[in-house]
Length: 109
Image (spheres, rainbow, N blue to C red):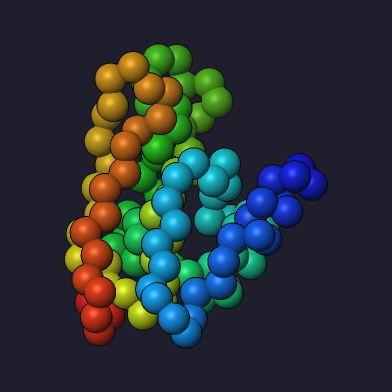
């Protein structure tokens, strides 16, 4: 847990300078305090911004033990807009693929 928490803490802050997008398997849900701390630094979860924050990304298939959860995320700098978000099955992976269409300008969603 310490290494995971340090990893989240080491991600760059958004804000001045170029807009940032951070995406991947965060092994975190929106209800984990360490992940919320990252969002509080100026990121938005693309799925949550589009009202899809509870679409499961793991496990993709098979017996649903543990229950499906959302641990893969696309985080966008608060200055970017999220135009679309979707989750797709990915053959051969235990995770589902996430897709986000972003607008690098005034916030859309």
